[in-house]
Image (cartoon, rainbow, N blue to C red; front, side, top):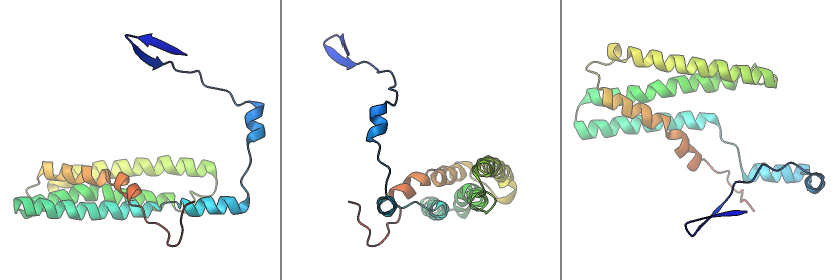
Length: 169
């Protein structure tokens, strides 16, 4: 169904459809081989790649800050901003990949929320400690390092490593 508005045709939103018996009849579970082939075509990404990417981005931002300003304190400020993301993220990944978090679904969910709170708390603590740890702190440089490191998730997903010899079909 469409609605006419000043000679422009706009589709109307449809109500969510219910799963019908016909849909259930058309559902075909994957065989073991099909599931393996699907996993090989779309390999999962280790969360450690994200942490490494954040660290590399932090080093690059610090180098760019130093090159643009010629001031060492600006480079340290930018690198510290990135570290305020990298260190808590590494702790978060370590906590999530522990054996306790993989015991069952309930432990995994509880572990996720616990480690996320630890990550946020540590990031805030590091930001509060920055003026005491970095001499002549440059807040804009520190925030630039922090933001760039936080946005690395998208870049890591885009440039994720491919498994050699695997070609999606």
